[in-house]
Amino acid sequence: MSGSTDSRGVWYAVGAYTAWGLLPVYWKMLRHVPAAQVISHRILWSCVLLAAMLAASRRWSRFRAAAFAPRTLRQYAAAAGLIGINWSIFIWAVAAGFLVETSLGYYINPLISVLLGVVVLGERLRLAQWLPIALAAAGVGYLTFTHGSVPWIALVLATSFALYGLVKKTAPLGSLDGLALETGLLFLPALAVVAAGEAKGDGPLLGGGDALTGLMLLSAGAVTTAPLLMFASAAQRIPLFWIGILQYIAPTLQLALGTLVYGEPFHRDQLIGFAMVWAALLVFLLEGLAARRTPPVLLEAE
Image 1 (cartoon, rainbow, N blue to C red):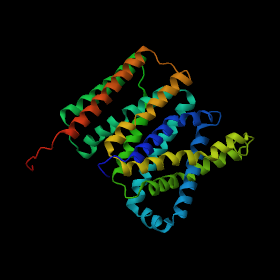
Image 2 (image 1 turned 90 degrees about the vertical axis):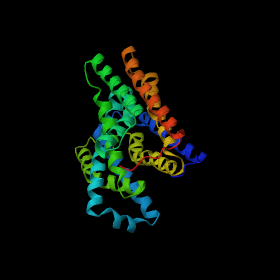
Image 3 (image 1 turned 120 degrees about the horizontal axis):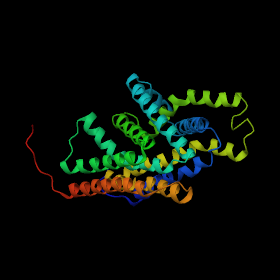
Image 4 (image 1 turned 180 degrees about the vertical axis):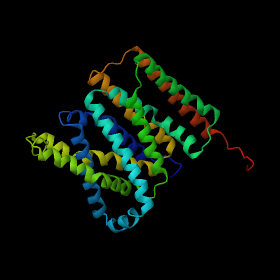
């Protein structure tokens, strides 16, 4: 990745994160459809669209040769399971009116990713990098204490996506090929869920659903893959630091939608807990910016 900032890359990133921030509106419009059906349609049509893109770009043979190596299949089976959990919880939570809590999950996700790097990969953090992790943990702890329950939706979303990123860190395929394999591994279970619903006569396509619902379900693959492709283009053009800053567009839009559009409660205790997380992110970003501007120090090899 280049160290320079390409303006097109910035706009691709803004487009991707804005789309992810506004995507709850799309899933909210499908809340009358069982969540399992929505998730399954999302997987099915994403897989179909990605397969078509691979075929159109004449990469199908190369994809098959790389994708079916045993080690690759194991890695992407784990990734498929994690992204399936993430999508399932997200779509269910949006439909059930927990959009504020989903935004919390994506605010704390980068900090959980950093913590996983320490625990799993043995990465070392500077002393100042432990402060935002402690602040975020305090914020989650405060929310748990004041509401009497753990914000499990936020934690599952943040942890599943952080683990997904960890698995993909060493995965051999590119973003398009990787997502095609992941959705391909989930294709048959998703097809079974859709087929079972239609066979019972209460499926959203053949069971008397309206035309708009059917069209939105069929378009679920496009609204899933479009921001992913924008993100992939952005990641090739701009430094990770800018990706790190711009990623907070999505949870900010989700929080605004939840509170201002859908009327979810956001009282004082929630504000205090979120403020701790926001403070953690601010410290995290400022520390990262300061580290980028500090000349490197040569250390003796251990």
